[in-house]
Image (cartoon, rainbow, N blue to C red; front, side, top):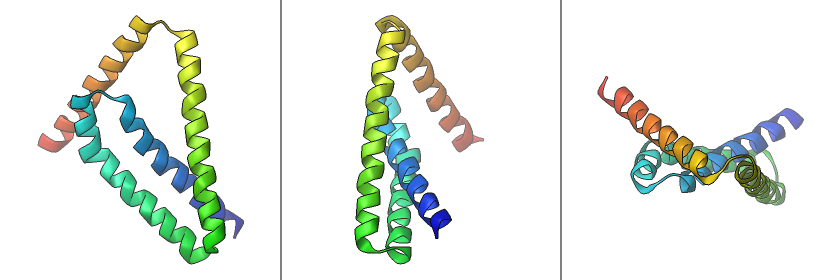
Amino acid sequence: MLIKFISFLIGVIWSYSIIKTQSVFSKKAGIIFKIFITKVSWLTLIAACYFGYKNFSIKLTVISIIIAILIVNIGFYFLKKFINQKFNEKQILIFKKFFEYTLIFWVIYYVLF
């Protein structure tokens, strides 16, 4: 029972963190990210919620989803704070552009080849 609950919680955290990551990207990379990755994450989140509903009480499922969302939001807050302290604006922008173009290239590569 404990393993099922932990896997449910990890599934919700994983899905929501990928959905939340979409807000970091620019519009052009965000569209590709939204089409190919976020749609799957929404389906995974819905499946995880259904899994929690079928295996646990509705109260425990709702509380776990709320806790998972809070964990992801707090994690993103502290990660943003850490990155802003560690790197300057120019370094963040260079890394962000590199990551976005790498994502676009990766999606195009796997769609066409």
